[in-house]
Image 1 (cartoon, one colour):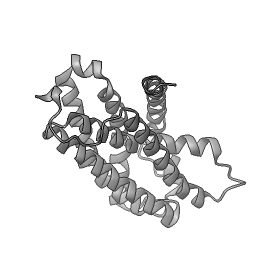
Image 2 (cartoon, rainbow, N blue to C red):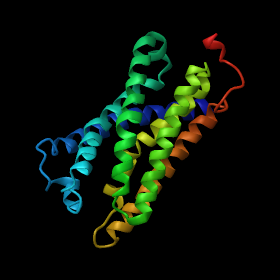
Image 3 (cartoon, one colour):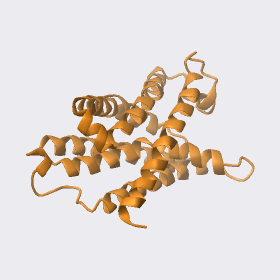
Image 4 (spheres, one colour):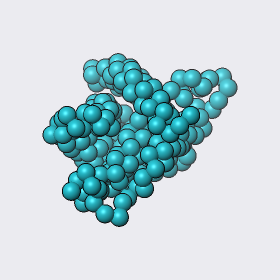
Length: 222
């Protein structure tokens, strides 16, 4: 299988998968619109649901993360970029603002109270740091005219964004209450989801053959 074919297959499979799971996440999120503290994930967080700060960050995160998932899908199509450059830039800015201003701070607080013990907490904090770093790096590179580097760090940023999907896929497929300790499984799943997504991201970057940062300004941006 040649490089271009491999990348095309990943894109063909990834885009509808993200769309489908984003829709499913919207269905999951809808159960929180009534602000009931005894539904879904909140049933496992009864120790902190009385904390107004934690609850605020929780609602901020769940009601905004799907926008990040869907916004990211539009950012990796060369055709979309060429035909809708202004729209691409606008959606990209909304993606960046959503992550850096809303979700990184919210997820840092949520991560400190994560399930999965110290394994889960450290995994979520590291994920949050990488999310911020990759996104900021992508912004700095495009401001300097490094289009290739910008694309690659956006791939890494989006890989972290969709760990929410990978996490739920693994949990739904493999978690068995009578076989696994929930806390241990949860904590290990945080790391496994991140490892899988970043591995795929680095595979895509490597197959594109260009380095994460170029020495000069990309020709397309001259």
